[in-house]
Length: 339
Ligand code: KG4
Ligand code: ZN
Image (tube, rainbow, N blue to C red; front, top):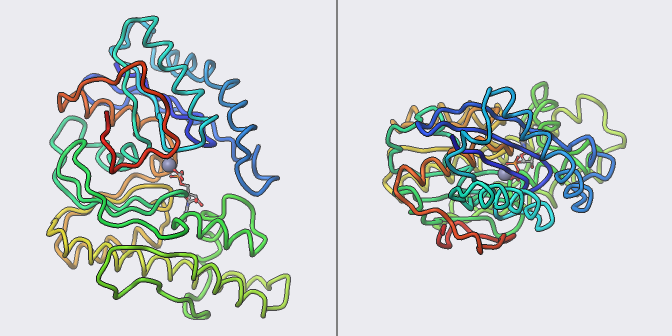
């Protein structure tokens, strides 16, 4: 079985995938409560806690799976993109383990993990060529996926990522971190037409995103409202803001699918667990007659199951393991070679 470790940001995660692609274990130790008082991730705190939690998490994962270190056939870790001090903990731990057991090591791009996460259920069945949308706290990417490791970035964001926009606007509203799930919860009882937000970049011929205008619009509108916001106003504001992001993402998916000619669309990343986005994508893709693979909620935010699965897929595709001399790369782009 393959052991994978993910410590790119504020989640310490460990997972086991069998050599047939079955997910055997996936454990995530979230640091959300630790960083919440600061309104965002504190890198120093994150890495210190990864070092503290990781050995126990690996041990717990093995115990729950009834497995031993001698069962490992390969070790994988996220080597980028992410916070360097956090990446170093998981990457070094994984390399040390691989070296000591003389096992192949797979250096995985965190975004490749997200990219393949909607296909976890397929196990070893072929992954179709597709259009991928990854929407997380750090990235908004549209990718033409021809095969494992064959990724062509069609569009990305010029400023904030979709998740970042959720988090920043939530902060402006005084909502706790992380803001995405907070806004999504309040939006459920709000009226999405009560406020007007721009749909930036929609209708343009390119596949770029921009969410900073949306954030600025939120700030100006909030400044005109009596504070603290009344409950109904807060819910309406959340619903209208969420609807604007969902409109933009859906429009760009449709445009990119037309452009690339793909009949299969896969959506992943933390924002992919947003219920409104999921509903709208299901109906849009059904109407367009395209197959939609939506990551399961549990694997949309950061986890190690997607990292283990990416390593499994690489092995299956005959892609060689990584060199032990390969260092972490905090700004590793999916457009760069994966080896
Ligand atoms: O993929 P992820 O766990 O971390 C990164 O790799 O960035 O994504 C985290 C992001 C955060 O910005 C968070 O606010 C957002 O995903 N998020 C959501 C929801 N749940 C998490 N955004 C909107 N609606 C949600 N339900
Ligand atoms: Zn992520």
